[in-house]
Length: 321
Ligand code: MN
Image 1 (tube, rainbow, N blue to C red):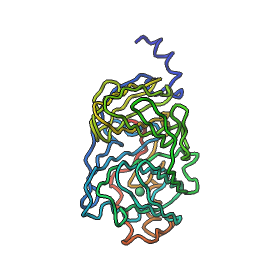
Image 2 (image 1 turned 180 degrees about the vertical axis):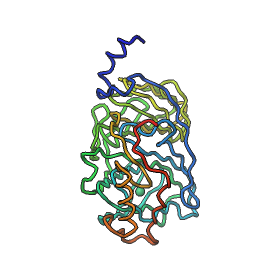
Image 3 (image 1 turned 45 degrees about the horizontal axis):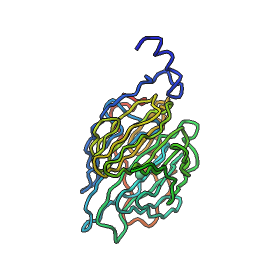
């Protein structure tokens, strides 16, 4: 590619000159992280060399786990700030409680969207009784500086719009895909969609060249732009694309994540997204003192204490390391 070509192409990716506007195929391996005593998750974001995709700043894929004879998910009350959490299930159910008084059971392909804004706390648990399998993804969306202190709110949307093609049902979780828009509140140009493919399906998904994208595989065997993506891994696709070829070798469940490259540098520590170490230190102190983050009622157990701050300074970081 000549220098001239590169200059000309800088008008895409939301006009962000710091993003090379070339489609890429970068397979991101998961980091296996143990949460609590029995749950292991696969963490795709932040990843080595790639911290964000659009405003998506955190992606954990978990299960399918057989929890028939186990408590299942038991996440005690903990705080959030500066981000939105997205709960997305393929199997099972999660009971959400928060400091606003929300009490909602999230089921497969329903959107649980919590906007923490300045401060919220919540708990997540498998209800009793619960289904035998638990399979889902937990995602965070960083709020831009202009909106990171909005009033906290929780949205539960059971009926989300879909885009269909032969062998493909795309459920729009956040933002817009093709001509379908999620009712969930978004604060940056972003998209999240669940892609259910049937065995043998071949489809081309319309994309926005101003967005960067990644596809997470949750189940089955599928190829994304010709690259096999196994469950629990994610393919980063870059930006500058107008469509994405998908092929399902078996029934497969994928998630499309995208958005305009996030320009701001953030400090992410524990359950907080901030801009400075001082923001983080204050939030930690407020949580430990019982200030600002409210109280979650009804959870059978004590709130999570914050871990100690690291000895090294917490520095703002951009979308790539
Ligand atoms: Mn949480």
